[in-house]
Image 1 (cartoon, rainbow, N blue to C red):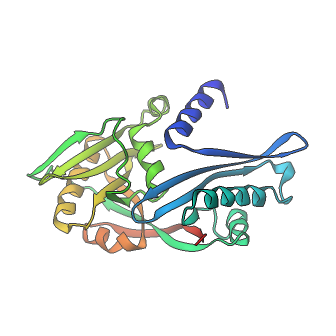
Image 2: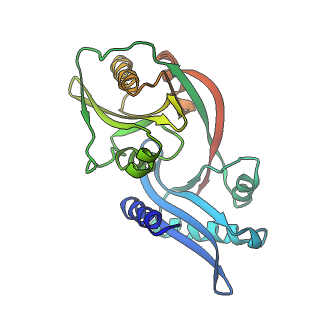
Image 3: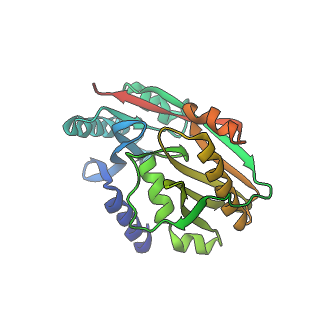
Length: 265
């Protein structure tokens, strides 16, 4: 990393409480694993295993397994319920490594898509930008859309975007609070790189889910997306929310890589 990228990386570490683990052999750093504790709906308390890398010259020597075991030790010390990870490929080296360490499939992830059309903000819905100081609603709202990562990290990505990177690629991102009958919803909309007419949606809803309110909030989210020139919105979700999103007009396009879990108690 160059100094500016490293400084940005450490800001993210501090905001999210990420713990970087490293593996050394003969005084050389040969592997790295970022882990972060979280407590969020609908999962509960867990340790998320994020970026895992091993130098190519030191692979197949137990480095990744040692890092995963160290993370498990931290999780047991903090008395959390389970470890969670989304490997790059379930059937690839990363998925096989985690499964050899006792991880099992927790839930599938689905890629969905919806065409925007010509929406308008529904009556009764008020919109406001989300300030950077806004705490993530991890224990009050479920993340229905955005399961490319855990709620804690997805939220941070939306309210603390890398402005320089967005500017460099002329991308746009909006983080919005939608108020419907004094009930707060939150969503992030951003353009996809090199595909300006496509965008991604992350959305947090209070529970229990209210289908009528969600319909209006999704209509508002589509309208905001249209302001950015987006014509098609994509998102990722887990099985429990697929039926709700299909009623809102989304279509399932494919399966993404699943999440794996190792229960500790």
